[in-house]
Length: 334
Image (cartoon, rainbow, N blue to C red):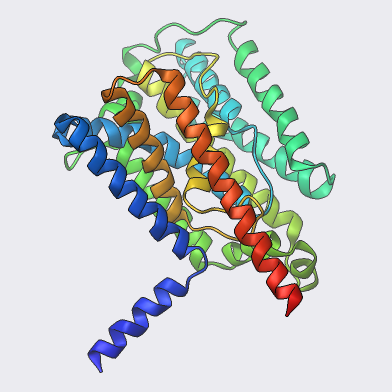
């Protein structure tokens, strides 16, 4: 009886939509780790593992935000620019003498405004998400540039030491705070997506927006919530970036929209909407981090690293489209 109970539990886990992709990419991650450890034994050293986890942390956070949006069947191209905006707004205020935690609060409000605007443009104004978030991407980057008169900021100073320790350099129970922040955010947003009505609505509108609307789902509100989560994640990464460098840089977050999509789609989140698990996003972000770290150890130039990641993303999306299109045709035939 106990054995049968365990088998049924395993079957239930495997039957979760998207779990197959998660298992597949997890196997890929394990293979990558083995290969890079053979190429360079330092790969599994304690120091490199700690650096690798801190490298993965911001990619996982923005991957969580992008996953929420992708599951609704939309996309957020503004996520990288919001990272830059967050970094510059918080740093500029701190260099002007504003209390670091007041600066953090104001920065969150500004970033949430961008998330709200994205949701309104996509769900209420019916703009294609690509166009809407392309526009807000440019606006957010412009704000990042203008907030300190088109200059990077100076040092945020000793008064911001607590801020820097909280978001990056400090340690709790042997782990860097940046890693703890990432773990807490993943737990919270995974719970919201997998265990709440809002999460079910996010999957519903990604699977079939018209059917979801007829079922009583508030598509407008749910879409806004997804974009707000994306904005929260981008804002957090911007604050981490500011804490890491100790200053505001106008190009912070450049290409992060690509990294966010990479973490999501490599982890099995469908670009067609309605499918994906945040557990997969963890694996996707880890694959990105391991590839960057491992190829660096192998002496591969940055260009080769970027090309490799780009190829993996294209192949992941292509496989998703082929699988989903095939399933759709089978349903039609039956």
